[in-house]
Image 1 (cartoon, rainbow over the protein chains, first blue to last red):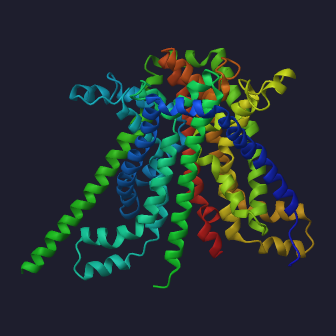
Image 2: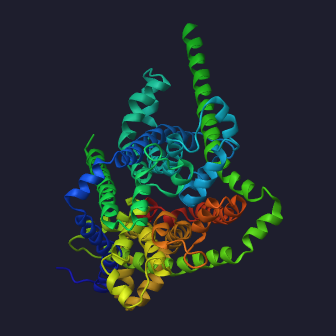
Image 3: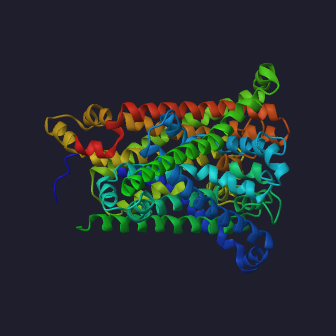
Length: 274
Length: 287
């Protein structure tokens, strides 16, 4: 074995592992321990409640829809930012990260103020029969907002480094712009779009701060799963809260594993000789 | 002839498509990002500048601002030390379980903020793991400042490490090895060689870590207990005022947080434009 030239291996690794153990691993084991307290009857009560199912459906279903919307709009916006030059492009590019930088509570009350019946957009939309604030549509809107940067930011570097000569070749062979995009460009972007989709999905499913203000939190209709956890905690029902936490955590871990699988698959695919 | 006309029509169509994509994107971004941002300031000043100042010049607002600064002042340095240590270990040495360590560092990013807060309640809450012991010794963590700090550390743990690891990996350890062989001590090597190479990426990580630490809502809301003047950070004070129908007061504090977000974005963009080569992994590899 090669002698280590650089010092500090034991110190840096020891500190990092101890820190992670205290901050991440120990609390995670507390979750597993408390969740196992719930017992069979508790699990039955939790999952036979229509309120639980409605909240899980809204959080995961809404996040799925929000991620789909973000893939479509994110692709369009990234395309405009990378391929075209127009005034204000740099400022808009910097603003993409606003949903990450803006505290979620601020985003929540701002969106509610805009879409409330007397708000800037609400007083146009409500007479048309489109109610956003205090409905599931508002939940979806807040989810799209907070997870918006993921697709753009994962797609941007890939689109920037995409070789243009393949597109030129397709067009010189007589393909229209639409054909080139659908058959040449889009297939190479699919893995990246999938990664962005999964990141957006994970973020939106667990989102709390921006959603609770605009949701109105009506049971069975616009109540999200993280809010159920908060309610159980307020009743000091730790075991049920922990069980719901395990469900949410299992969902995000599954997504993490899927993302890394997609990335490994893309890498292998990219390294294959053409 | 027809071929040329066909070509011209295709060119016009393409230009139209380009204009449509740009116009739609700009419209969407304005409606979706700029309008909410503008509304924060408009709502804060709805009753005039006087009402705005008055709603900030109150003891509980000042206490919330102070607490937020304190939490960030404790959290950010700890996560900087962790980030540098983790990046050093992961990019300068080979060891088993490295991938697992990396996955653990990323974990807080994909956990729901509410679940993050929940973890600490289950550890230190009244009926939590250490709850009985803590209450017997008169130590309060949940519904007190230590809980806020712990939840914020968890949420912001990945930010510095994630900026440093890919960059230090790409830069490699040659320069440091040379410094060592020329007789520099370990600390000299770190402060004179490593730190100058990673300073902009480190600043970038600190910026993101700080913005999130000051703005975090879900996780701290679970552990805070909302005791006014004692355990309410700025985002929590926004929520409490909003729920009391004190809209101008809520948006006044929200506007301070929005300013922080704008400042963060501005410095971040500046770093990306000016020090692109010191932040970008592919550029570092080329150097």
